[in-house]
Image 1 (cartoon, rainbow, N blue to C red):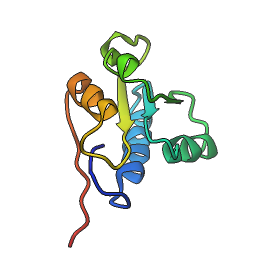
Image 2 (cartoon, rainbow, N blue to C red):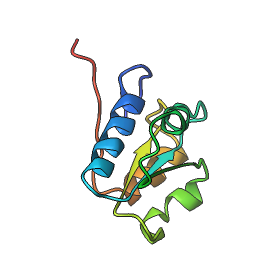
Image 3 (cartoon, rainbow, N blue to C red):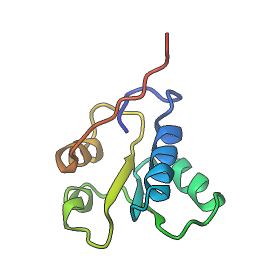
Image 4 (cartoon, helix red, strand yellow):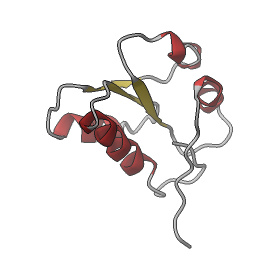
Amino acid sequence: MVNGKGGVGKTTTCVNLASSLTRAGKKTLVVDTDPQASATWWVERGPQEGALEVVTETDPSLLSRMREVRGFDCAVIDTQPALSSEVLAAVVRASDFAVVPTPPS
């Protein structure tokens, strides 16, 4: 989830997408790169479905190696509201898709 503005639904979209993937039978990892750790907060308070896990990580060198993580069918990454950061650059390079939630206005 990528957007330079806060409050556009990155975390909400991240957690709901990850939950949907889990319900579809995918072992899913939520990676929370936002220092506020809102995705972590929500995942930890949701129903424990077993196949959904969350980790908080802000180290660009580790995030750039996301494809090396084994044991999961997919990862959904929540980012902080910034368009130019080492963390965001590492996440985008390691990702298959970038979802950009935007408000209807």
